[in-house]
Structure formats: structure tokens, C-alpha cells
Image (cartoon, rainbow, N blue to C red):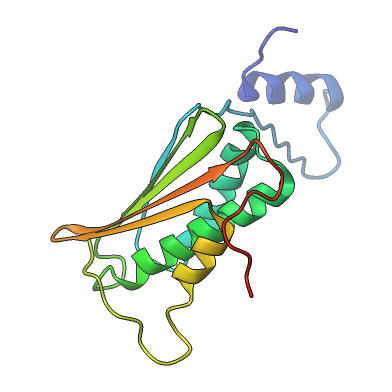
Length: 170
């Protein structure tokens, strides 16, 4: 049918469902409009830990749109989450500079890039620094390019075959 704006839909529902004398109690309506996903993904997030959940949710939706199955979505989001966590940790003063994530489909592969403006740091402590190993286990390729104006992590995953991630965790 015809596309109806959320506000017009709510007005119509109130006129139709609520008696002329008014409702005996409060009435709340919520109308959502699904926004179509683009073929490319690009977003910028504050370099704060709280941004990571939002980033993962948006990326999940885009990956489904790009044709990834549930397992691929979970693995790619995990790898991108590791890269984004590093961007947050390396950002300097918390939230000082944002990090950016971009994605595109190239043939049967998804390419994601996470960029930050922070400085590369070696892992702190013995139980740190496993994110890169995890990214490599989940993706077909991982490139880390530290530079004077930040670090760029590029992740590639083939969607053509199920379970096409990189080396298995062992």
C-alpha cells in the first residue's frame, strides 16, 4: 500500500480507536518506520565504551542486508567489535576523538575498515592483546596499518561459503 508517515498514522489511529469523549486513561502510540539500508555502511562513533553496543547493532543490521548468514554476522561483528574496542582504548582522553567504521561488499566479500585517530600502543598486561588473534581467526584477512594520524584496521570476509573464517582458534 501507500506509504504513510508515522505522525499521520498515529493521528488516524487515535481518531479511529479513541472515543470522541476521550479515553478513560492515558493512551500512548508508537509508530516506527523502517529505513532501508544502504549498500555501503559508514558511521562515526564517540570513542567511548558505551558506543560499542550501538555500533554492533547497526553493523548486524547492515551485514544481514549484505547477505551474511547468522554465523557470519556473529563472527564479523565480533571481529569488528575487537577492532572498535582497540580504537576506543587508543583514543587518548575518553571520547576525545571519534572512530569510524565503513563497510562495503566487493564481489562475494564484505570489507570493513575501522579507523581511529589515536596512537598505537602495545598490549598492557599478560591477559591483553588477544583481539588481533581473534580477528584473524574469524576473518579471511586482517590488515593493521598504524600511522601518524591513527590506525586503520581492514577486515575481509568471504560470504560465499559457510564457515569461511580465517584460521580456527586453537
